[in-house]
Image 1 (tube, helix red, strand yellow):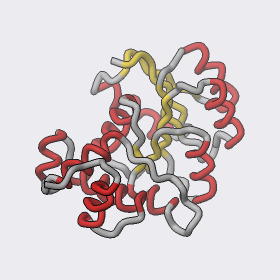
Image 2 (tube, one colour; image 1 turned 60 degrees about the vertical axis):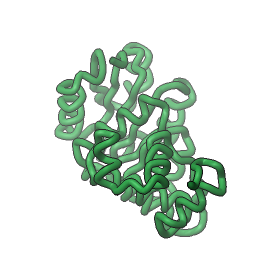
Image 3 (cartoon, helix red, strand yellow; image 1 turned 90 degrees about the vertical axis):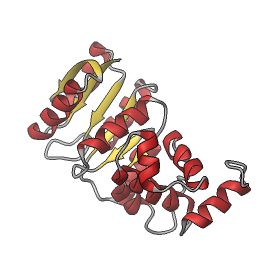
Image 4 (cartoon, helix red, strand yellow; image 1 turned 135 degrees about the horizontal axis):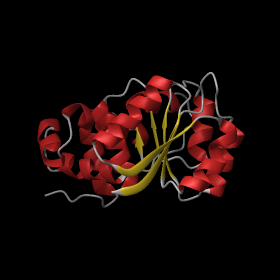
Length: 208
């Protein structure tokens, strides 16, 4: 169990929903609600949180500069954004600040848990809607695959279906399909066949 989780989300329903979800699944030793931007850095110091769930855009939003200050002072703090922001430049700026995951508030319980697990294991997790936003146009440069996405690439290369991959990794078929879509988007590919060839050319998988 990871030590402490900090939650900053001025929307009461969202903050309480996240807290209840992580508490029910015993993901952290403790959870702490941060109520204002002014208290953000100080409370992170006091709680010694290892993981932060944050929404930076709302009626009481955290400024981008404050967000970057948090990442500068706490470089090892694993951070998941859950937000309905749809501004491409702003999202890219947040990603460059060092966040490990980005979900929208329409994501399911399973996706949130998957994102937390992936980030805690050192990976990155971006839902398909966010990937769609930031890959529109030609200035998106992020192409690194997460550890979980690499697992899925290897399973795809062995001919596994989405259902088979979901069963092997103990995740939902919907999550697998989201990963598959994200992988193709990140790598600029159009089909599983192109993905297998791409992965083989780079030595990620072997072809029998």
